[in-house]
Length: 246
Image 1 (cartoon, rainbow, N blue to C red):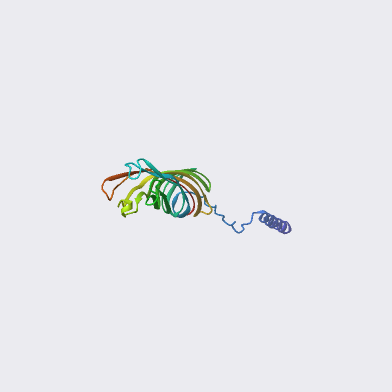
Image 2 (cartoon, rainbow, N blue to C red):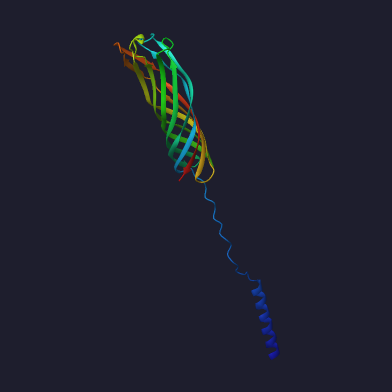
């Protein structure tokens, strides 16, 4: 009887050991791998840009015959350097991105042409030292690439002048300067922007800016008021830039 009890006890112990060996063992937990955050265009940004502004063939018309009635003095086309800074905000809804951007740029716009009927003392001059815009933007995002269109207001100190710089008797003592300022206009364009990191983006952009022409008036040294009409001024701006997104 004792022998049978001992054999039964031994068999039970062996069975328990076998079952324990088959049970799963608790090991060290697997390391947690966080998913990389998805990129979004939503947020504020600031940046810098540089490029070229191509001016149209602007002109000024002598309306009252100061030198020759309805004489048109053309300035020809002009390519100017432009560079500056921009800031804005984007908001992404699925693949669509909307936002607003403002920029201010230095503009090296200088043109001069002699008046054909009085080439010794009369000339037309155009000047502009800055170009700024405030625009809405709307586009479609393909992950880190954004294609957009843009439009809004344009501001500048563009000025076209008709000048007679001779004040001696042979010139008739007609020292005058009639200036037409075109400070407010509009801007339309499109661009492509790409995010190299979650914070840094680069862009290439085209803007068409238009400023209405105005009439300038001056009083001659011999008396009499004369008017000159400046043609509309347009600038085609091509530029590249970088942005830092917060």
